[in-house]
Image 1: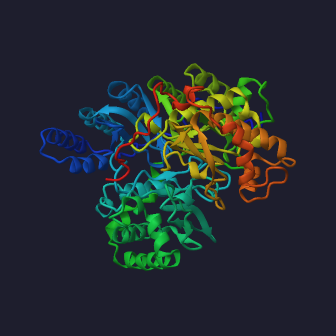
Image 2: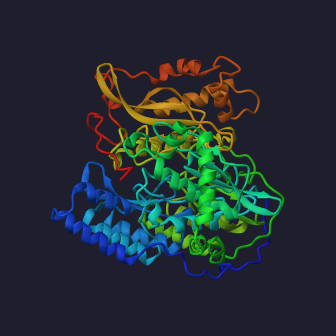
Image 3: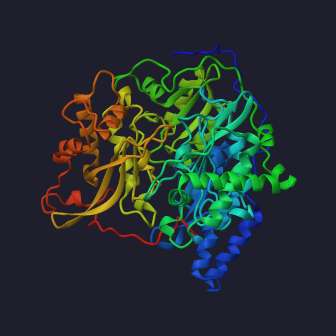
Length: 612
């Protein structure tokens, strides 16, 4: 192991935590309970109640309006052991005994009876959490890179700013009835934080010694996706709030309220044209600056967010390269060394590490949540975790000499799988397990992909480690398939006269500074997705040049710059055709069923609830 610090330390936390941020309100739980009763009595229309419950974080479960998916906002993805334990108890009492980490750092509880939603909300309030505005046409959970504060490449920690923005817009009258949902992402550097695919994306920047941000506008993923545009070279920190307010005000005034399929802000930017939208934002910001009251300006208090943050070590060392902190491995390497290589990142703070806890498509049981809470208390100096967009947990400030103990404790609760930072950690939205819009069971497929790639040891191949696999159950982008090296979104196709679940495969997506959205390649039957991935890896290994990585090779194919037999997307489509063909349904009926389903496949959907 590298970077080992001396062993003289205590197990005691390095700080005395102040009161945790309080996001929830008790009165909202009573109001929700009362509205449910009025709805059951027929005194509130279904549409009005739907808008109300979405605004309070209760999303209708698939084809079953008597049940809800309760989405818990986790601002910046930061969550404490006490909150994990409370979610565990609520999952057992009112849900299915497990929780789901989403790609936007939320935590979801599925199949909660409508009458029990208020009790879940009440329990969350006890530990400072809320479901308010986790759904609906408002500012959703504000994301922040899970590397914020520990990344060697960051100029400063953006977490206090992300928390302050989240607090400012939560329950703010100016954003309670937007044309559609609105997403804000904070990065720590240009590589981490998904800033280019949000309505507003911010990454720390400096001009001389003045702190500020580089701000991107108009990005987003969905049936039509766009990469965000850079607003200006540098936005000082005292202009951040005015900029965000200006953008939201413009979206509120000019956004399309008629066509739900085209009413995200990225469509407004695209249709108006970037230059005109940019000019409007800068003009609107000047108006906001001149008219903003002192009390409004003071309510965006990122300095107080810093004051309540944990006092952690700030000693730094020369920049290191993420994520590998030990030597090369192979499938025969010990399970511990394999885990360290694929799940542990050395922080910029000397002797401390980020440990990633691998989940299967974001799922974690109540007992595992409790076990993880205990591990965080014992072995994390930060005394909290961060949810990641890859549906894992990141536990930071773990001492190098505690890694073996950390691994043993994870093993005891069944969470010591390797591969968190590799191609094996496939992302999958909830799909047909709960979503009205889903066509395929992307959630189960992601788990099957992860299991197979780990069995084959592909997590140990460093040439694959920077590649990603992301899967959505429909063209919408809860699984973020457009920014994957290999992405898939669900659909249905008629093959040999019978309906079969299929996925459209995309190549070459990335959300980094110069990243691109994935390009459509071909349709792949659901039961052929894993074989297709393995065939892609096989072709890559035959055709790569030198130390070329899989993601670099795929980028070359997308650009038509392959070096050997497979030069472009048409060539890869031809090379994969033998793998993706299905026999007739009489020869292989199983191939015409979706994962997790033993009956004939049907493309059944219902009204989506992404918007109120």
